[in-house]
Image (cartoon, rainbow, N blue to C red; front, side, top):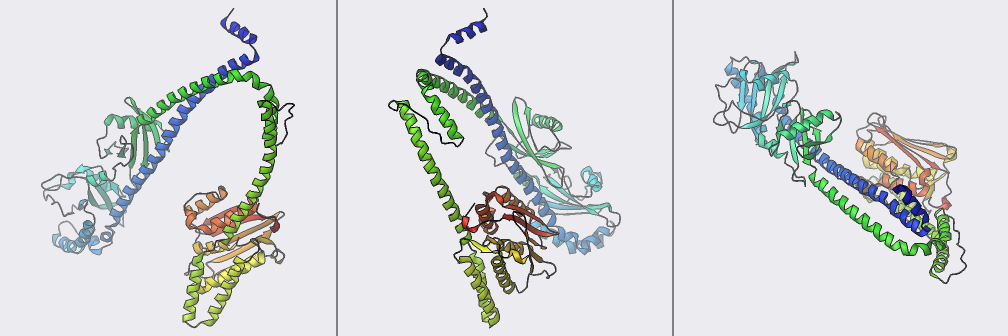
Length: 605
């Protein structure tokens, strides 16, 4: 008789209580194993993803800071490159020293003025194919005997047509000291041939670039490295291990070209690397750190999970064994009743005796069903009241700046004794305020909403001195349709705010409100031919629509108009309202939303 057969027969002889006990013990082994493995896997994954997320932000920040610095440094000398004396100096032959000196006196103040705002610049060097050399520095002096024709670094730069940041190197052409610098080489092109005829070189102290690579990450073992992938040059505040970079390059070759992060092994340790391109150059900003701290935490958590799981299993078995037999039969009917409750069916459980604990439990369960039904009705009514309260709050929010600015405009016209303008503005504001605060449960006809928009455009005309060409394409039979009050005006205000400019003519900016009846509701479209919405704002609006108004983006704390309107649509119409927004610099902005036919007396959705 095999061991498996013996165990099978032994289990068959056991009572149901003991069978359940053995089955529970056997089944628990698998979840414990899965929990242990999954906890280790997901904790390591979440730890590396979190580390990668933080490091990616930091690497991109360093890359942008370096790029912005080089761009700012480059632009600080732009005044020199448009100077007529400097261009004349480029074309003077090398043997005409007097003419060179005369032109030099004219453009040298521009060089010095730019250098004084950049103390990290050791000096600037000009060399060209005609063998002319000009060096300027507050700190160093040029060695007049040095031959630039033999300097490979600078001569090879004549083949480039775009700015280049070199690796750190010594300056062999200065006297008394050999400072180490990064050379930012800006080629000067011949406008006729398009070839590089001269180089303007900004010599930057090595420590300036290294200081911008300083790591402020919490992981003190991490390191920020400026890495040149083609020649393997590395720059960092602290020394970079050669074997570490060698292992990184091997892993980089195997990784996809689009990948910006990878895990690799060097020595006995596993490392995480995050890198980003330095725009306009062949350099990369690399962050690398060992994963020892994450692995240590994962191992400790794995061991703790195993211990807790084992203790929980033992405790559960000890508690379940003595009470299992007495609970199984009486609770079966209760289980069926609870299953029905889970499906939303309130089915009371029949009980003959309610004197013992199980009977009392079933009796209490039946009482709970009655209370649940009562509470369900109360919760539903409370949710309805809460939605109505939020809707009224959102409707009551008006922009005080609009009112204050309008009053200031009225005051300015009053000072100029323009009574007609003052009267028309006061009437418009009065009609708008009366429309806003009237007691109508937040509903108005489409005609009244259009009248409110007309008053708004009147105020806009007097405030800016220019009219906005607005066209309303609405069939007369739709003007009596009930809509949510102040549902269209915020999009009109948004279109003028982001798309209109006082410099635009009436033909350049046109505003159109179009309402079309459909089978189950209205399609409302607000479009303009203005400058359009920026890509980042457009992305935020689409995210707001995708998240059904539940966004936590800080942008909508300052720009509440569209956010409040969208929230009111969700509260009133629920998922029956459909939104779409398009915008581009060439064609302006279009908001479309479809609302269903709705009875105003039914309240929020």
